[in-house]
Image (cartoon, rainbow, N blue to C red; front, side, top):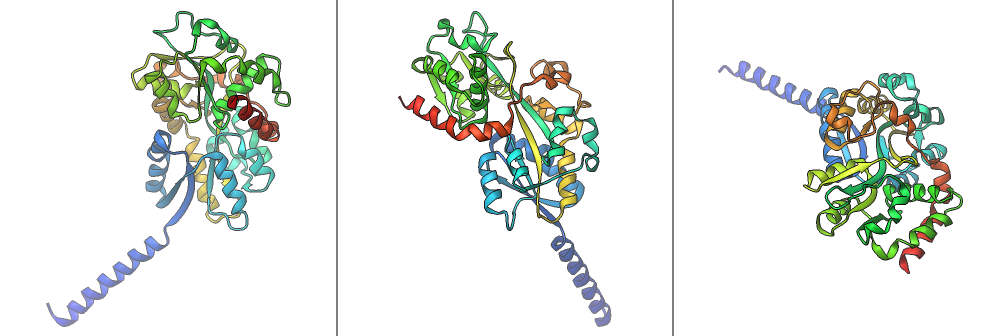
Amino acid sequence: MKPNVMLSALACSFLLAGMSSSAVAQRATLTVNSWGGAYEKLHKQLIFEPFEKANNVKINVVTVYSADTLAQLRAQKAAPQYDVVHFSGGQEVVAAREGLIAPINAEELPNAANLYPFAKEGMSRGEGPVHLVTAIGLLYNEKKVKNPPKSWKDLWKPEYGDHLVLTDLSNSYGLLGFLMMNKVWGGSIENTKPGLDKVRELLDRSTIISSSPEIQQNFAQNDAWVAAFSQDYAHVVRQGGQPVKFVMAEEGTPAVFFTANLVAGRPNQALAKKLIDFSLSPEVQAAFAREMRYSPTNRLAKLDPAVASEVVYGDAVNGLVRFDPAQVDANRTALVESWKKLIAR
């Protein structure tokens, strides 16, 4: 090769390398939280990885639960590090009130037009949309329980013996389950004494868990028969080989509402909104229902009959009980302290 041709070739290669490096350097990055375990694995598979490929963006996923995410947003208020945050305990109400998350106009999210009304009503208050729901009801072992539970009060039936599982109030599922028990025994968010007094009657014959994976362990290893827990974990337990069924109790079914929220004061907000909108698509939501039995909030999501039979689906989601997150937050500390004293006895 002649020297001038070789120099030209080298110059071109360096130019291409520089352009490549520049493209990498200019690649946008979004930082989001997820909740670990099977959920985070699916979160990456169904949302983050496809979005990265379609939009030439890098998504940095931080494993941190909702309450800790809110604490981090408060600590980072002057220089926030997240672009999108996901909450499952109503923390979006507090975050919006404190200016930690930015309002999104429904018109900015194309998929918002097809959400059930409850899933977008919080947007008018500055909260993010609800992108998934899991209902809290009664799980029972079909082989061990002759008379399946139908009511929250059935947890007090003596025929279930010492085969009950209760969940600590540090867990969102446990908190909502307790609030529903409290409600059916005459209590309210401001008055939880009726529920606490009734739970005291169950302590001697119950196992108390704090994390979601423990529910599977108790049905598989500790001869659990009945538990107040969520529809998605009924599926997880069945996948593990246990004959567990989920029941919506007749007095009402509370639910955990998963929200996707835009963090205030961050760059790339248009891209962050696009990510949130992607999570609202009917295809993504149907996949979450199929893989983990979460209820879709997009009315266009189509589920196979076998999947639909195991989740709250369609217009039925509009009837789910949602305790006012602001009221829950205002009374949470006192309730948790009372709970700790109760179970410590």
